[in-house]
Length: 328
Image (cartoon, rainbow, N blue to C red):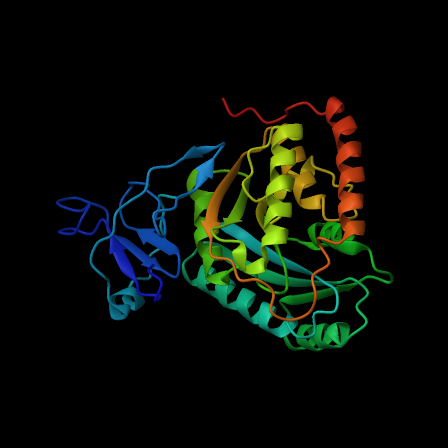
């Protein structure tokens, strides 16, 4: 998909990368479908997913496919892994009255698209209200009353990001789970692409990274660069943007991963514990949309202090962790 949102076919007969017997690909809002047993993956803007630090080959563009053609296509791609029974999306929220309705609407739209394409059978949207003091709890309860697929969990006291994320994973009932923020730091139209990558490569976690972080300010960009470098150095985890709020996980990961962090270190803890156990992660890039309302506290001195303390505690725990997943 180009920057204007136009749809393109990839590898279509007669186009670049096509020819006789070439797979027909359809790309819409970052998702893709094809009709043969070939299993390439579409990349936007020349970027492509990475697994274990290795880039996967990318495809070239080819002529556009009309919306009418797209609407007429109702097949389910059987060349991928089995579809998921249920997708759970949860949003940790603290004082997000300005974002909550937009976040749930975007999640619902992406899930409905995934149901139409046959990638999931059902979905649920979960709001984890972390003892908000604004109208977030009231709005969440109203939305849940109007839609049986919306669930709300209220914390009696503020448990910070780590506590809210642990509640979200514990509440989710799907076999695949997405955690993201209420301020929608990425276009939710990327979710179908992530789900198909999860199926295509049979990995356990899809973690997105941001193409461009300058919109959030240079100071925080520098802080994030140093933090990612520290994680790679101390824990040997090749994650490009480990704290970005786009983690799509198979529920089976949490049969063995128990999270302890109460703060912002929980993103890194999830990836470190999962990969140390042998679960596999794939990364792909997305456009980033910084928060325009409310205030983020994720780079405050107290948050950084908590991260450093929990980082040190995890280093001690890792001595007891042994791989349980055999990928050979």
